Image (cartoon, rainbow, N blue to C red; front, side, top):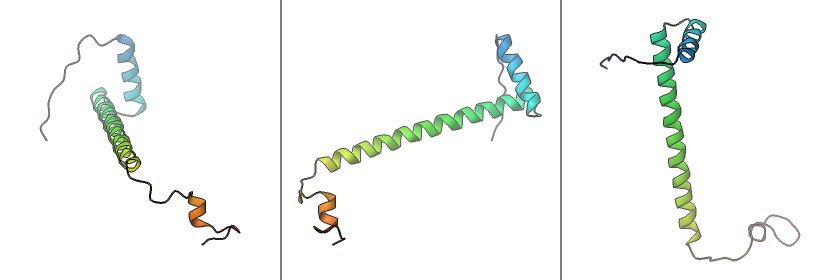
Length: 88
């Protein structure tokens, strides 16, 4: 992995103060805290993107299922249980 330098210009003072406090609280330098926060943000975004893809896949499967013909019109209870309520 190669390393790169990033210069942040015109950072709002309140954001810098917050970053300093976070770094001190976590016993990190400002640089290491910034890297940690960026990695955390990246991870959260990747998880959100994965969830979006999962939801889209589930919707596609549901859509495909709904397009299948109905071969048995009985309800699930009618399939699983007899008239006395016992499993068939």
